[in-house]
Length: 125
Image (cartoon, rainbow, N blue to C red; front, side):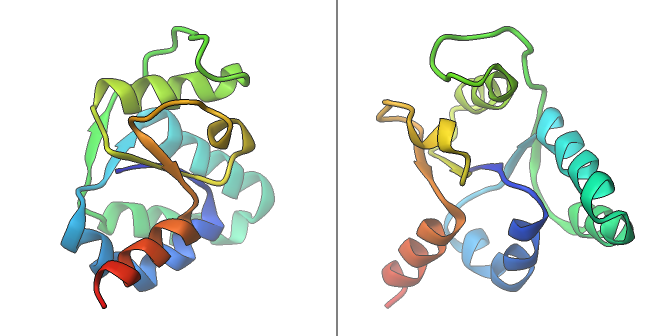
């Protein structure tokens, strides 16, 4: 599972980490970790230390995001994230980004955080 979300996701994640760990391993690329920190520093610098502590507390695999552009996604800023997810052979990309939702790929599957948590909760019933 691969994340392409920012701080609002991290708040939900803190509450539901146990659901994810039951089903999937977390994979983060260096590019998205830096993007999360940059966006939080830009929009809510008061929360940066909390976000960094949360990221540090997670168990996840880190992959290096290749910076080569690809033709699979319209926004080239998202290319490193998609490239890393493909190279890491993840099953799911979590993203609310409209460019990821428009990708026509069977694998990896793209879901929003809400879709993922709903899917996990449904599977646990």
